[in-house]
Length: 70
Image (cartoon, rainbow, N blue to C red):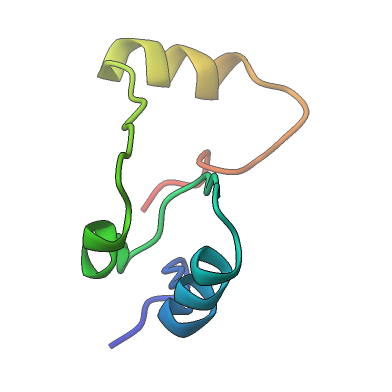
């Protein structure tokens, strides 16, 4: 079941993009990211602790993303 906030990358398009180019940088995450990590030579996960995330969401005034209670 796909929830309204799930985001899935198109594996075939990503694989084609990587095959057509020598260097590719892909940013962001998706619900199916574990399905294609093997096709990358390297990947980096940027994260912050819960306190920092809460502060950023609570003080941000230009974007409502992440502010709706679930």
